[in-house]
Image 1: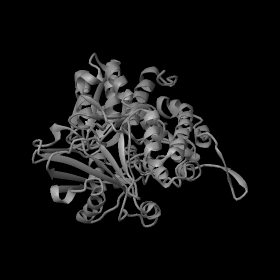
Image 2: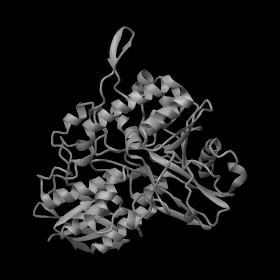
Image 3: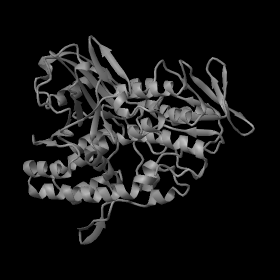
Image 4: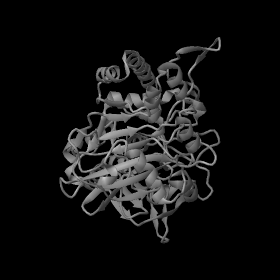
Length: 498
């Protein structure tokens, strides 16, 4: 039985802690803030409650497996999972509105045919078939297995099937998501639908590899889910599962360094000078924090996947509205920008800034637990922002509220109050420089969108969370915990879930 110190109480860190405790290890978690959950936070005010991090759960099988492997109570006995249907509602620049059903390719194609026409529906249906092929090729190495030592194969291999396109008398194959949209989908509304999946993760579709086709495929194939009471309830359930497995939590305990002894990780030095000795250390922190904790020790070799830095962040506006949620309202509405090029140049150009009219996601949960009574509604509006970007909160709020008005026509008349969450708030909660939010790992693109391995070059030190393989997002964070636990329990021969 090993003593294991876990730095951070994010979802990946707690997933690892629960699995390691079940395997018989003594696990202690050291979290610099006063609560658990990482980005899964909650803001409460005047009887309203809002998720300030992820608002929906894709691929719930990851957490079903976690709860199955760590206790007798399955996930559904610990939280109430609700399948969101429609999966999403879209408001396009030309005013077209489209609702997509959950986990039904046939239903999606039918909805597209009714709204955008038979040709557009056929092209999207064909695209989903190719996206499934990309998913089948990349699922295990990018989600279920530790990062391959020869990760360069993933960097070079594009799992999205080649669809030759003749342009200027030359036959070419789409290499980016933007090219997939322009050459294979063609309808600007389909392009907006496709690219919104990249934008949601802070990725520029013009530079994002075609392998990102797996992002919309995952949503169509496995559905979109909500946790009743807010997504924070998922963090609460995992925290309680850790406690039930006798994981120790120390809040307000900031790590100042990783102790090394005889050439291996041997504990954690805390900011108050105390030292928590351990046989193994699991770090669920951002790259800059890991560098500081290691105090100059190189834990990644020169030929390892480099840590991602400078990722995009988020701006979120929390809206308290008078008047109840209208019946039939979609849980999630994506309002697409009217000027794609201007949006991309603002977000990914130099200097980067929040666009004047960004693509925004409006979440309107049908959940009585979030409001003081049936005569009110809690709405969350989110847009991508450059990491570290600053701006007057009121001006940022005006940007997003103006766009959200296309999804909630009477928004300003119903508005009681609002609060703005900026990249600085995310930085304060997660420790990530500039409030950066990690994207999921993707193949191709020279490995630029891969994340470093869970194992490190310092014996006894492992990493978890969105900044480690397999990257950002709730499912990926959960899998990082499974991979770290597998490598610790079974050793380097561990090959992931079967």
